[in-house]
Image (cartoon, rainbow over all chains, first blue to last red; front, side, top):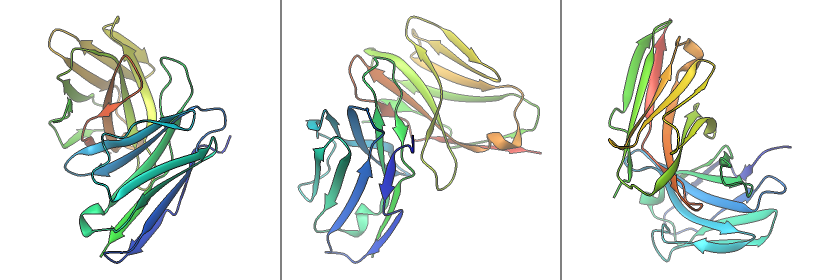
Length: 114
Length: 111
């Protein structure tokens, strides 16, 4: 399997612009997670889905952030409007249904908002 | 508030010696613990895990120890190799699906 695939790998944008990050989970995995990595907070959970349904979005920092999973093989994380403090690496991860199943991460999308 | 804490941002160890990475947690409901390893420009990759019913799990050069009374776990790497240089994240999960991660410890193994 190709693993979790994220795009773009790097995104540089200006404050106020819309940013869309994309993720394709591992086939057959029914959980999908979006994390943000910062120096201060490490890997911070933003939202996770089970069978395409959002289960917990309490980590989404503001209404500027939204996430969707229209089908089992695709998810997006959107920031609108973006701000400089949103600059971070955003990771998507997926896992199967086993109780002890670990997360499989994508390579991340590095976002820089100027 | 951080429920999983890695208080050492960095650690340097000589090749061949033991590396000990530490992690503390606050939630007594956590029942499953994991360590992830991350190289620059890559996503974290799973390294080793331990269930709360155990106090030790070993996989080759890597051993994870869990002290539930102290809410503390540690990762031992013996012997350390230059290829082990990476950022190590501790993670914990209560019954359910949400994984909580620490802020990471950057390990440098000096040849």
